[in-house]
Image 1 (cartoon, rainbow, N blue to C red):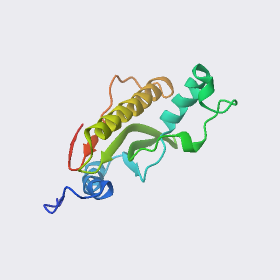
Image 2: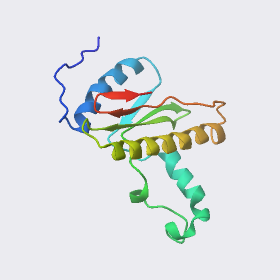
Image 3: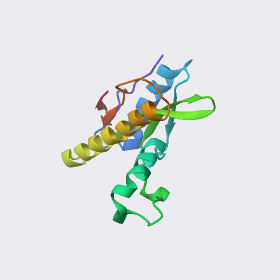
Image 4: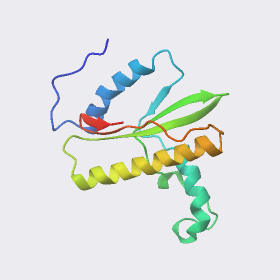
Length: 146
């Protein structure tokens, strides 16, 4: 059973809001191969896309066409599963605190769309998984969409 809190406030932090959703995700994924990697990890699919696009924009990184981990955008949560001992990313999910400006929310949603497109490309090209869509979440405070 999921216990939801009625004691939420517009001043809650991003981590507080995420914590409530994380409990629901743990419950939904219980007994499946799906896992949630949180704590703002970097997305491997995004990093691979950035590296493959580097020759198109040679002045944006080092001359060796490699990117440092500091240039990788951090994601709030990555849904993944293991396939033959390899962590395969299925979606990147983003959270923001309740009182987030419209400009910041739009920036987050744009980042979320780009990140999930990298995952979709990876699923199709690297893993040969035939899919045209993935399920991802964007949440501001306690309101979000899939």
